[in-house]
Length: 263
Image (cartoon, rainbow, N blue to C red; front, side):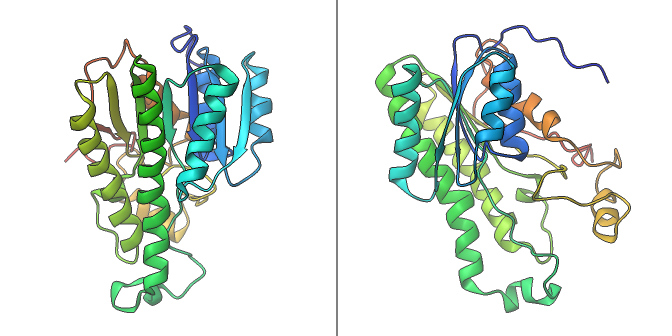
């Protein structure tokens, strides 16, 4: 597959990416850098690899250790963007966790047996964490008065009920609705808020071959019959980050999902 030609679609922009040390977040950082953006990598994990990849594209990047469930950490990441690059234009809220440990007894993940702490941990990270990231970014974007684009990473699991994955499904449905509410609140103030709902995508969270038992179940609801890539998800995020390409789009969720919602 030939790589898409870069056109400087984000030239002069600054993007804050939570969960940017790996997976979809890292792919967004690299693609956005190719398109001219400087990057802030906010992650609990070491972001040095992402920084190197961004710098290889000729852009600048900084990393900050960030627990997105803490308001002060999100504010520190936004402050770093402004202190380092002068402004903040794009946010990708990609930090998140799965609710299912495939080494566990599957019955333990059914709602009737679910440990409440497991449920609240996923909600705290996947919903409250996204809200706090968005909140800190919105305050800065409103202060700047130059608008911006916020992209929250949800999932097709926010629309497809998966037995044994209640925390994840509920959390991603929450991200979808959070994005819609914020879009309405900010529609007249220059900030667009959208979501990307990936289907099964090969990341550290979903390192599953298509022909494995779990993979076969996943492919049964994926007409294209394969896992997606982080780079494919990043392309959807780039579209939403591009203020020209998606200027009239807010409150929407794109689904790079191999055809899961063709029916």
